[in-house]
Amino acid sequence: MDGERKVNLSEGVPLNSSGGANIFLNAGKNNKLNDGTVIHLTTEKPTDVGVHINTTFSIASSKKIKLLFILNFLLSVICMIISCSIAFYYWNEMTSMRRQLDVLRDQFLIQNLKDGLINNEKPLQSPLVSHLRPPAKRLEHREGRSGIDKNDISPNARRYFVEDLGEDMLLVDSSKKSPSQSVAQIQDLPVFHKEPLIVQFNGAMPELNLGTQSLIGPWVRDLEVSTKDSENKIELTNNYFIIKESGLYIIYAQVVYLTHAPNCYFIWARQPALKPRLITTCATGDDASARPLDKSQISCSVQTVARLYKGDTVNMAQREHNRTLWLIPGYTYFGFVKISS
Image (cartoon, rainbow, N blue to C red; front, side, top):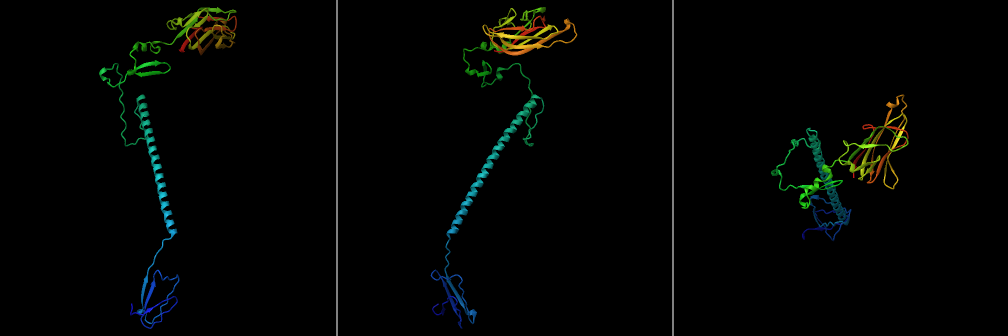
């Protein structure tokens, strides 16, 4: 480069060299060309012009570009987290729904199997079960055995006994049973051998005109209907029924009148030294037909449920006077059925 001719260029300077020219353009860090610089080269022989460019360009990263890059990166991370959360939520919902469908399918299968066994029909396949799945085997009906062989009982099988019979039955593991308790105590429970208390009384006179009295009677105990030892539970004394055991009773009665007029009777219960309690009432209309008196029977029957207490005195009282009654079995009767203590 020492033997070569150097031409220093500046903005807007034309080259009018008659010989070959070598142009050196140094645009380093110290020599900066402003934007819009135009260099005009004019020579006689353009091919003789040699251009040597020695430059160093430095690109400085802008703060805005860095900030945009960071924001873009953060936005991408947030989008990825949201997408993963939504995917996990739907996956969890699908798993829970699948479990619920499995439970419903099992319930359908069990219900159909029970209905099929009860009705002796083939169980219906649930619509939730795939057709590719083989149908469940039908349980064979087996007849009950009259006896059980001790060898057929598993040594791990639990044995239960009845501990208490109140409103609910309680079964207790036999391993917890006290040695002092015996099977006789279980056999003495009322549920095993005692029938409900039934007491019925029939009229004890073919035909009776009450006149001015109000108590309906006399009565006689029906031994064919009443339970054994019923006289110890309900006592009959002078047309009164004395209750010996407290409890809830069904009370039923019927009276047949030989009259054309209307009738009404009451059933009362009374504790000693207390006011009577009205249990129930029965009333009839009149008979407007032209039938003779001996064929114009009018019956009045009633049924109710009442709680009676020990010592109660129960009676049946007629409202009207001078009524003729047929106090014979099948026509006039009075009864009690104890249903609960």
